[in-house]
Image (cartoon, rainbow, N blue to C red; front, side, top):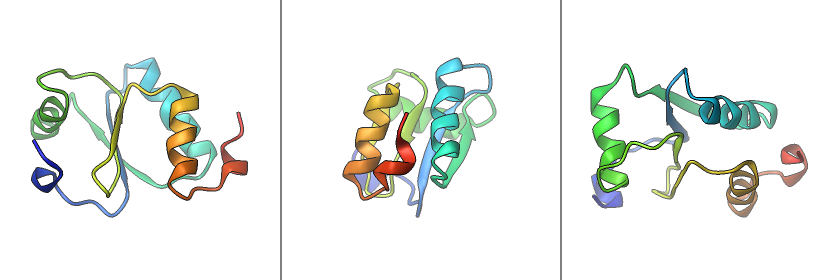
Length: 97
């Protein structure tokens, strides 16, 4: 799968499930920093599950965060997520943890 194969979104997309503590933690960080995103529950969306598997060579690890530029993170730590956000122009002060 290449970036050209991905559906286009104008904002961050978070793929996860409601039962996963890592998904809840990542969403809480984004919510606390007021970062807009679209949330897709993989337990309810088979097409999204296939997209995630394509990004991960058959795996379905969550959360998977996909940015409009095609970059993505899989199971990021809070520090990895903050680093990615600040390196892409987000306000560092709002991401302090």
